Amino acid sequence: MFYKIENEFLTCEINEMGAELHSLKSKENGREYIWYGNPDIWYGQAPVLFPVIGQLNSDRFFYNGKEYSMPKHGLARKLPFTCLGAENGKAVFSLKSDASTLEKYPWEFELLVTFELSGKALENTITVINNSDEKMYFSLGAHPGFNCKVGDRIEFECNETVCTERIDSTNMLIDEKFPLLNNENTIEITKEIFEPDALIISGLKSKKLRLKGENEIEFTFGDCPVLGIWAKPGAPYVCLEPWYGINDNPVPYKDISEKREIRSSLPGEKFSLVWKAEIIK
Image (cartoon, rainbow, N blue to C red):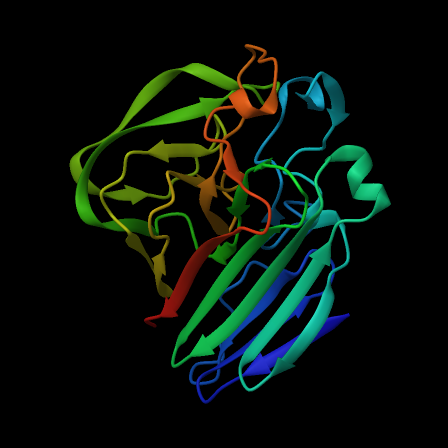
């Protein structure tokens, strides 16, 4: 089922499956800004990544000596959420742990996904609540795909000197970094840029960027430690992905608490990821 919210400038639709953003459309120019999810190219649109990001080594992790199986990008994107309300330009969705999630992920949790329209902007807040009685380990990420074309540009608010990490054909992180920006702020979207897979960037000074072409949006990603940028090579979209977490590399670790960029929260604590997309044109 899809839920719709709107304001004076925008309409927004969300799929209760995965609490996934399905549409963001301007009332002024009629343009759609969210990738429509062609299964022949990439079936997704804007999945929520929880409790892992990317691929785990051998699709598994260990906690307190016990092995757990976990699919790529985690559980949330494949589960139905409950809509807690969708009105006045705001929609809230909830996913709570149950017996089936506890088999794969040994903590009780609630995941709240909120969409709110304000002027020409959509803000998405993803909040993890630890409902268990012990420290919980998790990763959290967003993966919205925006319509664009080859030749469009990504412009960061600051000049950046950063490298990118890459994943290999087995979806494992390569132990090497590749130069990306040298006191520059612009990445051009070419047919070749995503052939080795996603750009995985850490250490950015910028808190936001602009995706510029026929459409233009300002995308705020805040203080996330890792930003993923990805599309199928040559496809007419790009995913802008704030991550609190990162893909595994081939080197095993004994416990999920040792995983790179892993987050933790104490019983009753909340942790939120926030991103915002403002329509410029």
